[in-house]
Length: 151
Image 1 (spheres, rainbow, N blue to C red):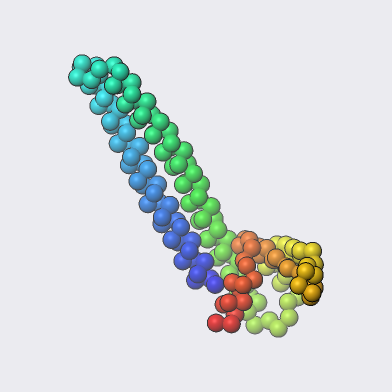
Image 2: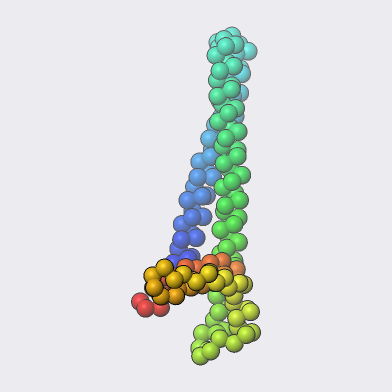
């Protein structure tokens, strides 16, 4: 589970950083292009109507990219923080690898919250879903945990 989470997180960070680099390069290129069309307009090689159209287009694209850059930086920061939280959780969890029974201290250290859904009797049997929010990791679907345990 640890390897899978690390791999997914690393891939997300790498993809976000690549997109961030592309967006930052395009913003620089747009700034250069805007200076060029301004100079062309000032020298008379580009009429005012064309200049207005190009400058509005460049400015709109630049604003969109700048907003995307902010979002990507935040996503990268969140992913890096999640990696740190995962490392802290794993260090805590290693203390409890050989335990036979989950004691209250271990529970408080590893689990942030436990949510129990209302019982469902539609299938004729009473079923209740439990969601565990692990400290620093958030929710991990029970199917994921069971899959790793049986493998």
